[in-house]
Image (cartoon, rainbow, N blue to C red; front, top):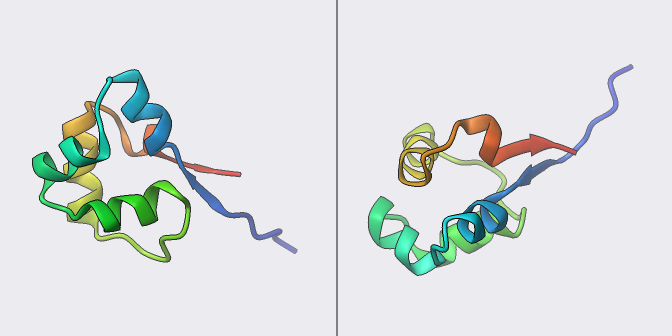
Length: 70
């Protein structure tokens, strides 16, 4: 039997490493601050691939750097 685990978004850590704010990221990727905050606080139930790609491009990271299983 497979144990279900949650997905953790490392947005807080990645933003801090880049000295970037959620507001700045929002302006770059065209996603609202509210939606980025939902993702950042691990409350998102789903995310569009286009949004995921835009965030990764803006942060210069891979998807696996942003989302991890816990």
